[in-house]
Amino acid sequence: MTNVPQHEHIKWALSARGTSLSAIARALGVAPTSVTMVCKGRGRSRRIEEAIADAAGFTPAQLWPANYPDQQGDTA
Image (cartoon, rainbow, N blue to C red):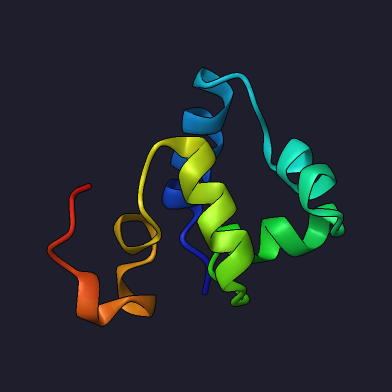
């Protein structure tokens, strides 16, 4: 199951910073669907998670805490 509100929040955060999931895909040289799937939590790619989080102003652990159980308290 996807976390639609989280996905929309991430897209909003990216838009507020002047970027998008498509722009991240282009920068990484991957398919936009790959970035969308990772954003929705339907796939895992540490590289894509880090790029999305960095562009949105978060850490990967803040956006996908289940994927980073050892970093759950991080707020950096």
